[in-house]
Image (cartoon, rainbow, N blue to C red; front, side, top):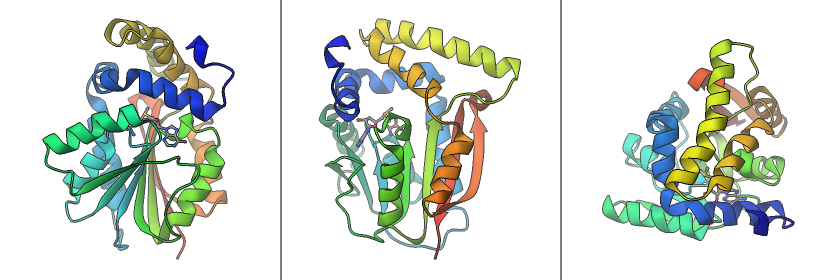
Length: 242
Ligand SMILES: C[S@@+](CC[C@H](N)C(=O)[O-])C[C@H]1O[C@@H](n2cnc3c(N)ncnc32)[C@H](O)[C@@H]1O
């Protein structure tokens, strides 16, 4: 990790994910006890509740394409585009799509979420799983999302947030995550540094309430939210005005 320092934030993050791409899914399973799949499905279900806007779905920071795959499972009529700036992560995702014969249904593109290569008012839903806290400029990324969403379209964010309650279970979970992530990372991916970054990036990120407020200021008002994993993971659903 040290050779990645002194670069701009985006380059650092893209190299970091590139270095763990082939072990990313395994580590996600281990660190969340397989719960991350249920969390994404829950987020997609919440996002599709009472929505009447039709159109394609964009999964930003798609990584190994899990959020895109879960969206397809819940709404197979939708066309989905996944974007990420890490080619190694996308390569793992592309292999998964091919294995599931989803590569015509879900298209992937290498692009930076700070500058989306799409026209205004294109998507009915934008999803982002464990992505926004890694962005150099979350505000710019959110305003890009607002631009490409159709009026009435939704944004579903699934993210790890700093815990903002004083419950003992939440504090213990947080400590366990901080200790376990680097150990599991070093055993299973050979990259302890990357898995030190993951909990620390969550700790230094804004709270889910602050993100929700920022999102609303940028024109995407709050629809619903849900806390998971003792309040360390949250789903936020927002909607662009008509
Ligand atoms: C923790 S992974 C999440 C992958 C996937 N969404 C999931 O739910 O497992 C974060 C991903 O965000 C991507 N990412 C971070 N900043 C980005 C940016 N500015 N533009 C595009 N992708 C970005 C990384 O390359 C990485 O694949």
